[in-house]
Image 1 (tube, one colour):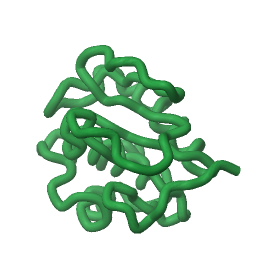
Image 2 (cartoon, helix red, strand yellow; image 1 turned 60 degrees about the horizontal axis):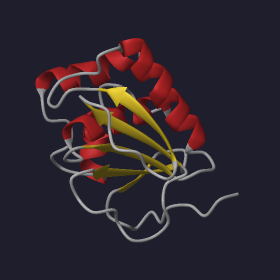
Image 3 (cartoon, one colour; image 1 turned 120 degrees about the horizontal axis):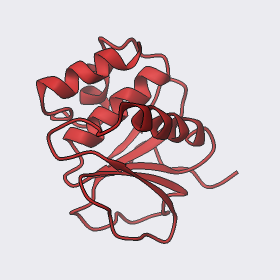
Length: 143
């Protein structure tokens, strides 16, 4: 088993199952500590290469993923890998797209879809999930 994130570190969300996922903004420096074993980059354009395994999910700033099917597959993979790896979800600022993706992971983890945004706002960032359509996306993610 790999060394996991510390749940007391800012930016690390503990899901109800105990899985830990780090959210962050790519415009900020890499935080100290262990690097991810798997990352999902939520950006409108291809991200720079990183020395760990990473997936790019095309997701323009303030909008929704370009492909719902791709989003479900990539986020499902992230949720599975968070069981025993260091998973990071990241966008430019670490709030809107990252918060939306974290809320979707919370839904996959058993949080009711209508409470997932509040769960992420209480446990990750009070300003997570920035737009009404991102909030609606999370509510529909369970369907």
